[in-house]
Image 1 (tube, helix red, strand yellow):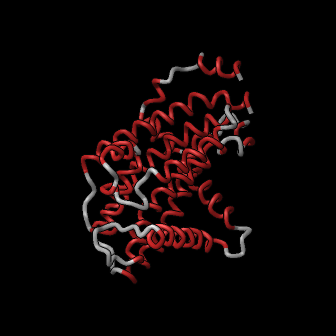
Image 2 (cartoon, one colour):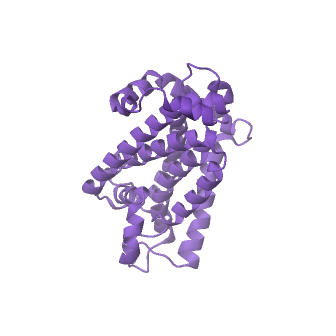
Image 3 (cartoon, one colour):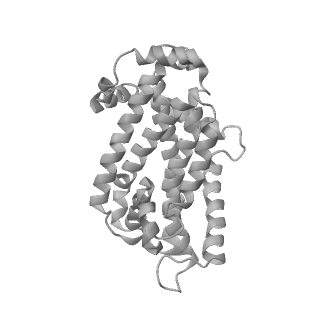
Length: 285
């Protein structure tokens, strides 16, 4: 492993890899491969199951029912100050945050094994290993769209049709996708050299799950702790998702701009780290 790392360090510098246009051009060149791998992953996940893609609907629904019971019934949680708030409204509001977090957690949890589980491709010198991350992200977006369809049906039945601000959801998702991709590239690379990374990531994602305002509003968090939660890159995205999907409000554009800029930088750094370190993958695996 030491020999591989030394050899990598003597290669080309990392500065050329920090060119965002080069990154986008590389991914666009391999767009068909990215889509093909994403399609194969989605089909393979449910191919052996008798219910097939139905599981992608049942899984979030069952979890939603459990979370709604625990937080809305047992802990009597509410989004607003009205005691008459229905459990259906609580569930729909909570589901907005779950959709975004599930996208993030699905890709990040899989990231440490993306390379080590595809050893055959590592041995092929010309194969673009960096495409595994956007393929996994596309698979996560597919599951998000399925969940969003379930949410739309529920909102139409319980509250009514969603507001026009729903069209801004792609903008809300942009920083989440960039953050997820950046972290996934780093974790996919680290997973080759440090096999314990997957265990640590699973634990950290669980911690992040409860420190993201999914089951509660950020306004209800005491101020001494609110600043800590605001460091979480998913916090503002979850809050914006509820605004555009449930309440007909606009995203907090100032926070969105800052978050999008930071997440774009993280994605570029993660990509550069992966491209720099992937030269040593074949020597380690």
